[in-house]
Every structure is written in C-alpha cells, then in structure tokens.
Length: 245
Image 1 (cartoon, one colour):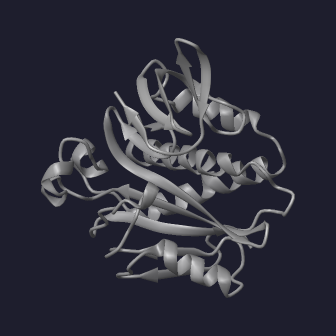
Image 2 (tube, rainbow, N blue to C red):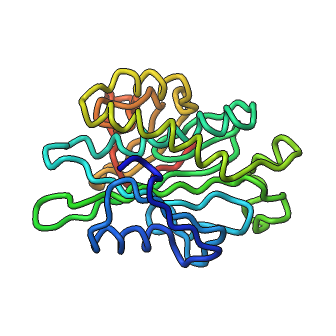
Image 3 (tube, rainbow, N blue to C red):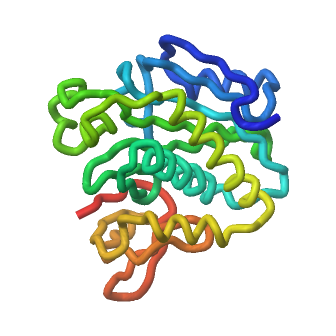
C-alpha cells in the first residue's frame, strides 16, 4: 500500500501517535495515515507537550521497513525534508529545517517531526512518524510563552491554506524519499537536507554521556547525527537535549 491509501480522519484525538501505534500492533499495513483536527495530548520530542489546536496539521504515518534496515536516525531527516518542501511549495515561502526535527521559517518554528520505533524482541516491528505543522493558527491561538518562537503559514502569509492539500503534497514528497532511503540511496536526501539546513554556523550546547559538548554546528553525519566543531575536535550528537545558543 502507498502512503495515505488507508486514512483515519478524526475531529479530535488524544494523540495520533498513540492511535497509529495501536493500529500497528493490530497489524495495520504500512502507509496507514491517522489525522486529527485537534489533539488533546499531543507530544513532541523527549515527551514534551505539543500544542495541537484546530487549524494545524496533526498526523501520524505507519512505516514498516524491512528487518535489514538500520538507518533509523535518518527516518526523521527524510520526512522533515518533505514537510519543509511541502510548506514551501504550497505557501510560496522560504522554509528550512533544524536538527533533529524542526520545520523553520527564519528563527521561528512552523512545525516538527517525531519518529518512534516500536520494538519486539531485538527487532523493530514498525515505526510511527508524526508531523505537526501550524497552518491556519493566528498569533493569539498560541499560548503566550510560544508567541515569540512559533509561527504559522497564516501568520507568515496573511491567508489561510488547505490542510488537505498540504497533507497530500507531503505524502507525495515523502514516499519517494523514504523508498530511496530504504534502497540505500541517500545522496538526494543529504543534498536536500544541506540545502534546507538552518543549523550550520550556529552554536549549540549538548550533553553526551555526561560530557558537555559546546561548539559550532557543521552539519549532519551519514547516520543523521549532528556534527559539532568543538575546540578539541569534531563530535557527533545523536540524541538528548540540545540547546541552540
């Protein structure tokens, strides 16, 4: 089945990630798409609460890569590219990406990706990809603490957009990138990420196995980890909390 051939669309869910994971455990096919117009318990990276009011895209997609697939760190990279390119195309807007999962307009966050692997024994049984994108949310629709750091297509362009059209564009862009990644053809994906990446040259601080890494971002490595130029050499950060300075 292709992406979106099977769709579940809800006015409201606690979390599309949880619903899609439940379907995965029930044996649903790869490409199942779960969409909610609102989420009451949406979450982002590291378990953070994700504001999900009406007017945004809140969706999750079920993936079932072959057992031999190992490049799990690149899954989120792949879909972040597709999301940024879809927003850029539909809204005629310059949209970028920021490691590991942010969709950016300048220094403000338009959306984000979340990739969660579900393991059985020592094998990944399936992966759930989540996309949250602020589409038709006005400035007053964001909680006060987020109004300086978040944005929407409505705020940027002054006009509403079709969430269904954006979702359709996202699916059309993400499936070929994902199939290429499964086939081991990563060059196109890295080329697109490097074109969209807003991180190089910026300073970050992160903790890796108790070690504080403080340096300048230079890009990502072949497995999707963030590369940081530090006084004592180049280091890779693949997970955990990253503070952009």
